[in-house]
Length: 460
Image (cartoon, rainbow, N blue to C red; front, top):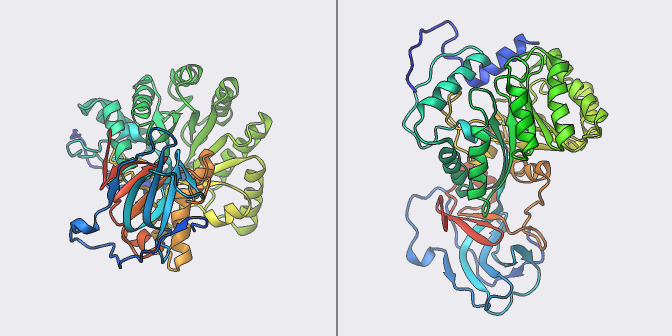
């Protein structure tokens, strides 16, 4: 969105550095039926098109309308050495023999991995699929929000179509669920909530979506916002109410939390607060959030996103904080922006704190980057954590798959009997290599049904 602008000394600030700076100023497959076939060597990065004999093929379901059964033949769960047959009945992985007449999908030795969870994304802001946007220099969160409004008015494609396009792309890359933060402010009214809600309905066969009413412009500093948050919760259009930097941006810690937690308490919705504040300021806000959560018995219903005040804490202080977060049932999310701002996931998990991974903004006014691909986000998490060992690379993947599932209260799709049949298929040698090389998602399966092939939705 081209616009008139005069360069300033802050020109060139990245979203990542601006948030950090502004905040600082403010203060495998057991029980699967083994197949006799051997997996052919596969190369994840090959550019050659597969031969006809190597393409994944399907045979029709002839079960006569009884249990919906599919056998995904010749798959390698988590990159197992030998392929197996994965039997799915009515959307769930089964440990029993396949019913007679079940549909058969020959997967040709592809690796099967659980689909992932995007625990923090902003699909309403996106310009994904739109003409290129030229961004203006900015130096504060307030200026970013002004750019948001300009872009919103400049884009010609309706918000609901842009959101659905991006969310569908996420599905095709292997996302099975997401928590969508949607801007709520007088500048937009509830258009974003309605638009993302429409996209959620359109993609309900393939994607679970939680909607957070996010007061990007501030709860207190922007009159009219708290009334919109209240309406969104009262009408049942949202699953959670959000907040943003109660001290550093809204400059009203107690009043901010009064509004956010009051809405959650009155309407039975959860809470997810953006907290970019660092050091003592961030800790003051975080401690106040913990206290409110306990006072209102909202354990298990509160998340704090980004939480830049946590990385770099001394070990003893981190351990004390993690114990308090776990006791209050507060979960955290990170988008792995950099090595100094990514959350210490392993240490938090040791104390029982659930941590989800998200992709944040995708090609919006804040940044030209982002792709809503959670396998790529796991790759970035491994990168910023300087992962080198296989187990470190696998942990980055599981943060995006299992960590997100726990955070959203979904069952883990571990490909074992009884788990949801939600998985993706890729060519590759092993899970660590897949995290590094990011092969094309050849197939995405949701509840035993194929919902995407080669990066495109099917049957949609």
